[in-house]
Amino acid sequence: MLYQFHDRVEAGQLLAAKLNAYAKRPDVVVLGLPRGGVPVAFEVAQSLDAPLDVMLVRKLGLPGQEELAMGAIASGGVLVLNDDVVGALHLPQRLIDNIAEREQQELERRERAYRNNRPAPVLGGKTVILVDDGLATGTTIQAAVIAAQAQGADHIVVAVGTAALESCAALYPLVDEIVSVITPDPFYAVGLWFEDFSPTTDDEVRDLLARAFQSGRDAVSEPIAESREAEDEQAIQAA
Image (cartoon, rainbow, N blue to C red; front, side, top):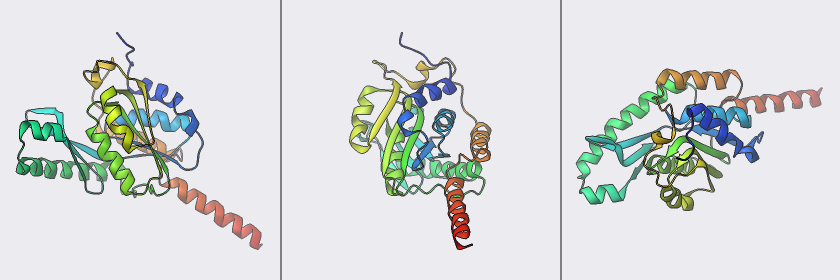
């Protein structure tokens, strides 16, 4: 059997080693996909000395088979459908709309819960590293990519612990780079490649974002800090 990660923390540490070219760059923002992608993203952001935030994405699971994605939504009104699933099962638009509306409510709840009134990061002109624990069908990460593009990201990197080769191939035209620690073939499922794949909780996501904020590695505080430094320099020159 191919390598298994012990948990998401180890996956993040190994993934960070593959992203070393992005370390200590002021234009880099690391965005984890809640919930399982955030522990991975935290390790990446810490290693790269980069700000951390979340990209809110919700999978549209097929009723009765929630792990099968018929689509995904992301912040900013992004909706991506898995045409293969929708077409093969002849899914009615009404069903898709109902599930999308329900997941939009959950996405908004998480936005409030995770950011604690902090504004969303500004992605314009940034190099955005989108991080998840794994890439299976690629539907949710595709929604995240489209959302980042819509917000003006200059360079988009998809970084995951494990990925299906065929999903990487489908995603390549949409992004600048895809980085994965392992790409097992056959892939089967993300959870197969983790010894501990227990669900990440809302509290864990909030704690990791709070730790990033306290260390100065959040995607909102960095531009503010830079602005203050510029003001201080101008004051010194004026004196």
